Amino acid sequence: MRHHKGFAMRMRPAGRTGAPARTGTTARRVLIAQGVALGALTLGLLVLELPGIVREVRIWRMINLRSGAKRPR
Image 1 (tube, rainbow, N blue to C red):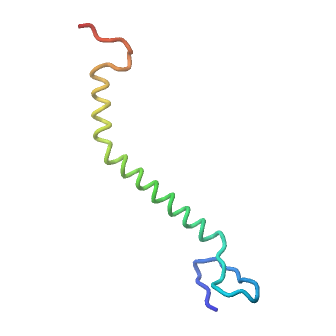
Image 2 (image 1 turned 90 degrees about the vertical axis):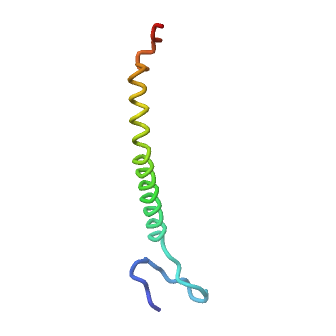
């Protein structure tokens, strides 16, 4: 039976048919890959939204939103 180098495998007990069972190494790799993909997606979204965020901050500074007091008319 050939074993793939990338997977940690163990043999099933005698009498059972099917492919060898995979251990948690594959699941861990999938979770890491999903985390990397989610992080890249989040970073990409932040980069796309950055000009709008900068614009909003400029508007907040113009109306002096931080003081909490309304401007006199």
